[in-house]
Length: 91
Image (cartoon, rainbow, N blue to C red; front, side, top):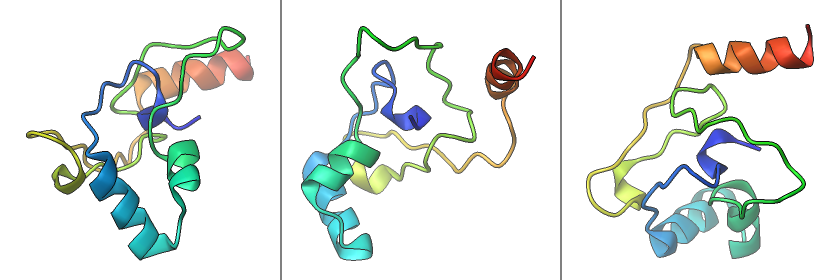
């Protein structure tokens, strides 16, 4: 799962603009955008770490396709939470 899809991310997506952007730039359907970009529903069978806005697994989010003044730059450095997650997987 990409970090921008975390159920607690609370990104104020403008869904129609997001669907249009991904359709125009990548040819994605609404279903593909829902699966790969927009937040996922919390699943009781998954374990979640807290949302990490600074994770390298967080897509860049432009203010163009959010409501209000919300954006996220591309993260090019591994966050402390990324390192902790990898250490849990590979002790």
